[in-house]
Amino acid sequence: QVQLVESGGGLVQAGDSLRLSCTSSARTFSNYRMGWFRQAPGKEREFVATISSGGRRVNYADSVKSRFTVSRDNAKNSVYLEMNSLKPEDTAVYYCAADPTGSYSSSDSTFDYWGQGTQVTVST
Image 1 (spheres, rainbow, N blue to C red):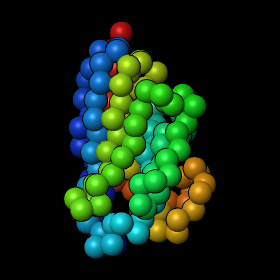
Image 2 (image 1 turned 60 degrees about the horizontal axis):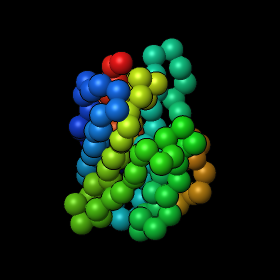
Image 3 (image 1 turned 135 degrees about the horizontal axis):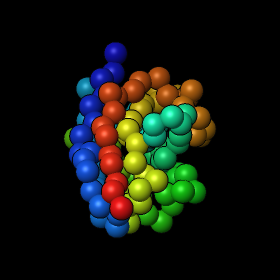
């Protein structure tokens, strides 16, 4: 069983930055593709970003492209989401997830393990 723990959320103003972290208990963290998803109140969970196991391939939702950066440090069993120029519409609970299959899909159904989420609130 892989445990994921997110941190770094909070309340910020529009235009501010936040860095989310996700630490994994997996012994073979470097084998997992990692993803970030978010869910706003009353909305379905949506894809934000993914990063391949080695960190060379990244993919972003159009809504966050050029503002968010996903990265990972396999030596620390961690994945990060750097969020810049935050907007009120970025307000959501952010989840990290792990995919052991190495899929290229951005669908949340390809991710087997999920963290508990961290709240990000962006005020105007």
